[in-house]
Image (cartoon, rainbow, N blue to C red; front, top):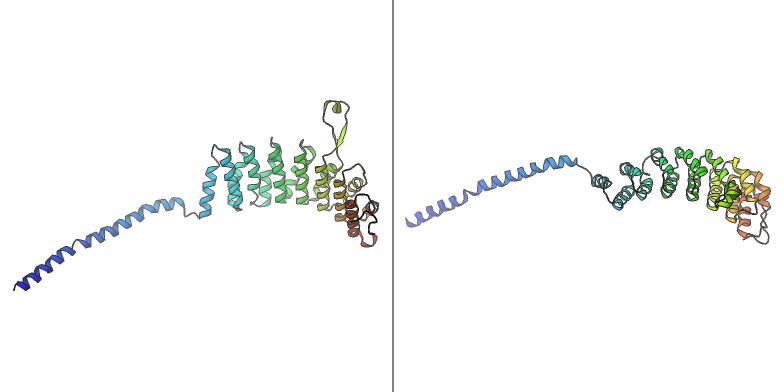
Length: 300
């Protein structure tokens, strides 16, 4: 009897000890559901953004920083994402107060469609800062959009800084639109009023900057317009012109391939500058292989 009573008592004790556990499990379950429900509004606010979209959102917010360097870094990172949505966000920095940020933004928008990017960057060619104008010109060349040609041609003709005119010449060659040939030909043969009080008083003029002329010659060759042959031949035959400019003029004539340039090129086959002589020889071969003779003496 005692054994039975002890067994019944132990059974009741075990049952009593187990009873409270069921509510604890239920409470824990409902607490977990409540926590999950609490996170739902936050997830909805995020809009289920991808990691890249979240990064663009964060970087866009940093464009409002008071620190110019932080804004520049944000624009750089937006451009490095190489996504149209990132470039569209970076476009807001094209009007930034800091020149370094505006110049960086000119490159950062290049993941947009070419025409859209060119339309955004063109106004920077009138920026007050030389560095910004130069970077804008180079960026327009990367777009290869004809939408940038009129503004680049204007910069090539009127900008006061040679670095900007040179960048515009390079960009026009990258775009390759024949409409730019007159502006490039003008830059190749242009003479500018010399600086200095006495030079201005005497109305003396000097040739266009060498880098600008060389870039114009290269771009004329890339465009391939025969309308440029006359000015290239004139430059090629000018002994006073810098040798680098004459070399690029000879190379451009070879790319254009107009037989009218053959006499001027043939005259340089024995020139004392071996590089110019060799380039003239290669250009003649492109015009007509039967007309080219291996340069004597100075050829390389």
